[in-house]
Length: 493
Image (spheres, rainbow, N blue to C red):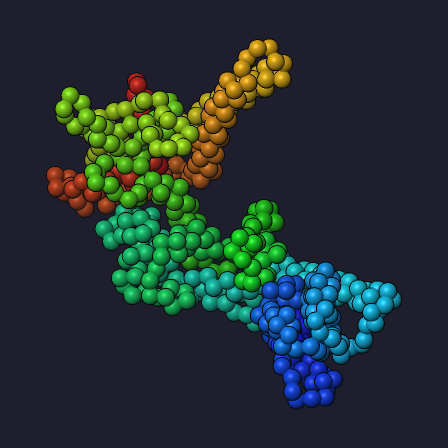
């Protein structure tokens, strides 16, 4: 027996009704019952059906009574597979009609299966269309258990959960404003756990991924996205082996359906959080054995590699430096060898930030200067030119490869691989810069962020700043430090 919610609603195929018919057909109490309650007929991997097939193979039963062929499956091919498998060892009796083992009987059986499969497809289509129409009418179709809201099923809308909404506001404030309570996403998760604040599902421990999802959820600005995910084929995932599970796919943004909902945070603060999230991985990377003031902020202005801190031996003396050299196995860009002493770069950057914070008019001017310089525009233009040159070089090599004018095949392959690696690095950096430009706020937004940092700075004694204080202040003001042989370019938010 199999029954799903949609069938009970449409046809009255309740479990009780099906069992009653099958028991009447059996005319015996000496029976075993195999029931899959609530499972979709799209898949064969159902607990009770699996047990039935095993029991038939083991010779435990030799007669099967089933209400209709579509109880095996809504898929015609699956129906034929199961019927053929079980008929070899047991007699199959259908309550709704008999099917002779003749060409005509087989044809009728297959026609019934095809009709059943068609009905399943139509049911799915109607349900999908109904949900979409409801969403387009401004209704929230289902409960997504969004933290900060309760779901009103009757009216199809989200309502603010006051206690959770205050926690959402706390998360955004801790992430976007200078504070001494929690640093970064992981710090916020640990703080919420320490305060014994339960998650949406009542868990006592907050994981950083849950905090990240809240920070990325645009619903809190008063816009709830529906028709966002394509779940086709996922229905039977829980019954499939790990490697065969169908992954969820995000639909193109133009297909999303937006519904108004109560606002918990401002759009400004949400965009501010997205800007910081773009740098979160680098900005709050796990500390190593040695601390570097500019960890996660430095990039080579020539080869685009990030520059990380390291200890370098020079004439029996160890010195700390920032370097773009990548020695890890499989690194696509080994770096161009750019390096600078940590003391030198730390002093340059901190002196600049200290000047900005000590002179409020300077910090505003620095923000305006960065806006006017259009650094990202210039860098995008340079990368696009390099991409064109790289693509042209690859075309020339491919032409040489096909013309067979004497250049070694292995040599050409190696050069093609190097160009492909370079192109991939350029594309990745292009995508990063494009994303930055899309998320860049106007001058007023940047000024507000710097103003918050300034107010925090003024509560501290400049002469008693710890390493962590300086690092926190720098990260609130500086988005990136780009180093070339001739200059140090400090890019603010």
